[in-house]
Amino acid sequence: MLVLSPCVCDDVDALSGIDWENFGFGLRPTDFMYIIKCKRGGEWGKGELQPFGNLEISPAAAVLNYGQGLFEGLKAYRTADDSILLFRPEENAMRLNAGADRMSMPSLPVDTFLHAVKQAVLANRRWIPPPGKGSLYIRPLLIGSGGVLGLAPAPEFTFVIYVSPVGCYFKGGLAPIDLKVESFYHRAAPGGTGGVKTIGNYAPVLKTQLTAKGKGYSDVLYLDAVENKYVEEVSSCNIFMVKDNVISTPELKGTILPGVTRKSIIELAHSRGYEVLERPVDVEELLVADEVFCTGTAVVVNPVGSITYESRRVKYNNGEVGKVAQELYEALTSIQMGHAEDKMGWIVQLN
Ligand SMILES: *Cc1c(COP(=O)(O)O)cnc(C)c1O
Figure 1 (spheres, rainbow, N blue to C red):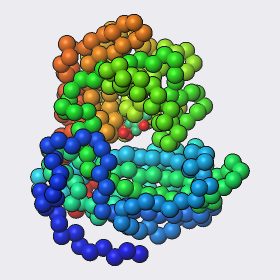
Figure 2: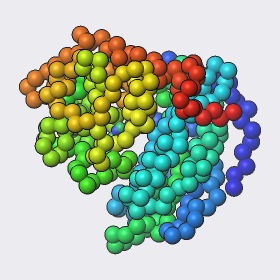
Figure 3: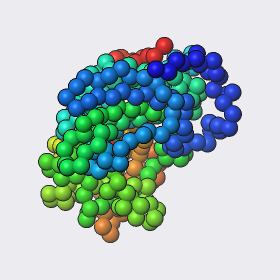
Figure 4: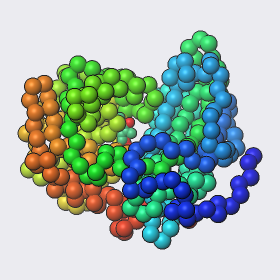
């Protein structure tokens, strides 16, 4: 077990070389990672902080050979009085456990997950950007780390958390993005794994995403695999539309990732008097919507400026940020950053 020296360098500006004004969503190595292991059928061991670095893993590891792996994503914010805030971390713990069940991996007690997140954040606290400059992105992984040859669950599992300071996901703050509807490739199918954050769901979307980016789009919007006409979500965020002040988002039925931001935006919109419907959303409806925006931990709430479906391109709000997206963005981020009172009980303060 590694003994930590007290973190004396908590003056973020003393960190040389980081231009907090101009860093996006990229990986920056930090000081520590947190690791816990578990044998198949056994209990989770004692977790520990280790210096951030490479993992040693068998080439026969189930995660490498058969994709037995899950990830999570959440953020820590630094406030003006130097507190550290987490947003609904127990939601991530519960989603990880739902995924662990789907992927035949052991679940992790919610308290163990929360303790691990706190340790990882506090040990790296000097990397949390100053208030308003970004956040510390927290990436938990649950992987089948033990080796197997035949297709079977791993004999050993590893839970690891690493962190990285991040700025805005898309440059320029709340700038509307351009989406391309994909009508050939699908992200998920009924009965598959689209509803869990399993690692294998992400490399397959790169092909369509890279093609779309090459044509100037920001990302891809997927349709359902059965009828190829109902909107599902973007590669790594959920989608909402607004029509006549009613907010709609595709219902969760196993093919869409149940985003914590999605859930929070639904609850916030309700509390502000909006009607919010979780229902099938036909892509044609999206094309006549007043506003479209997407949500996720990385993107927060991001307005959609245009959608291109086959040969049709629809623009929203003349490239401006829609008023519902703007209102909900401000409502959400002011809670996350500690500027507004946390009436929902969503914030976990670390110190
Ligand atoms: C992580 C993710 C989201 C957003 O979930 P949040 O909990 O809001 O971060 C949406 N869609 C996909 C495919 C994702 O992987």
